[in-house]
Image 1: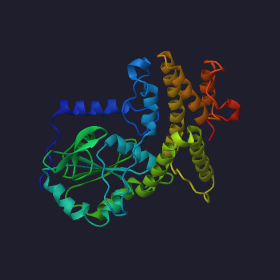
Image 2 (image 1 turned 90 degrees about the horizontal axis):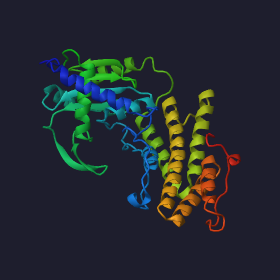
Image 3 (image 1 turned 60 degrees about the vertical axis):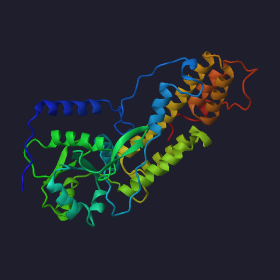
Image 4 (image 1 turned 30 degrees about the vertical axis):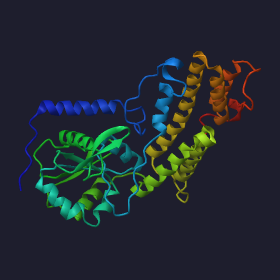
Length: 366
């Protein structure tokens, strides 16, 4: 059994850690937002330049937080991998479970042994759903096919069902952060949502029982409830359906329903006999962030409408402002939309414009 060689290229290591640090620094103030790319600053462009159907940066920024991805459903004993390190940390926080990163490469006999003896056997799938299982995997000799993801063509890994670029990037992060000495391949590292190592196990002779022991060690001081993968997916699926209903039912309705979730979570956290729909502080903070994104989207749409008017389409601008006032009725942002609409003049304002004020409801109500 051959050990991996120690990391020698310190310059490459420094670049990798630097890139990871910059990526973390680019996260929003709440590290729970599902959009991990750095948020572009607010900017303005003429309606003629961007077209009547396009939206501005503020609206796009809000929608990037509202249009989050729901992970694929899995059977209870089906193995679930991810290749995205930053997304894994965020999910770890929301579910209150550790990340389990497996560091190896496609030239490793040790990984092949573990894959056939443990990863593909009964029981490992259940374990994988009690953690966020990250493939920190290097190499280009394993099976992959081209796939279009978010409009881009990527190499889609057939081993882990994720982007090959993602699992190779995670390999660099995990190697350069947790493999500062020689290790037996593959290396299994349990990591908290804060990126701190909790436990590890090395080599190709590991058993499922040993990994379960390390998981127990990694979670022995865990505070509060946690969320299994199936429960997590079901919650995200229901929240995504709710958020997507805002065009039909209005953003104010979505804001209120999210508030009901927060109220139920607060009651459950104080009474053990009541259910806790969100379970964790991180998930609760994310729901609050979605409420804020709804308001920001409306603010952006108001800006877009005003840009439309400045470009000469007053009728289109008034129609959009009226829709915002109706859809956000009961929240202060609806008053802002109505005030902008009133500036166009009462004589030619669209019919049935919702006239709502701050007295009808609070923007931050739960």
